[in-house]
Image (cartoon, rainbow, N blue to C red; front, side, top):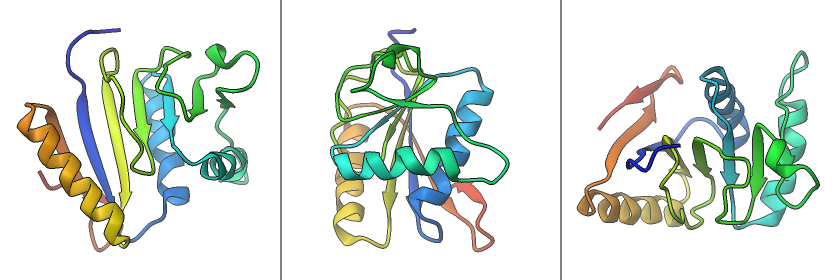
Length: 153
């Protein structure tokens, strides 16, 4: 892992839900050979994501585990409420506005927020400004009318 600052990518959900978007982003992360850490401060959301990653497609699933279960360090995708990185993930996913914690060691951080939720939108704007002022390497992605992701900033 590197001590360099990671890329921080904001994903603005407008047409899709977290359940629809997260599995695809995790698949792409795994295709790169990276491990992923999905962080949420909401235990119920983590439970829902845990179930969703096993069933999001009829012909596939994403192998993953929870940080509070045995062998968590071996998981390619780890769901957690903690700020630790026990599986040595290169990609960090923040899915509910929870604290990013230290980002050293990650290659890329994904901040996924629901643009239809005013609180989430306001929080993302504040986070963007704070990170930009700190000199972070930022990118902003939004969905096209056809549902494809386009880099907007």
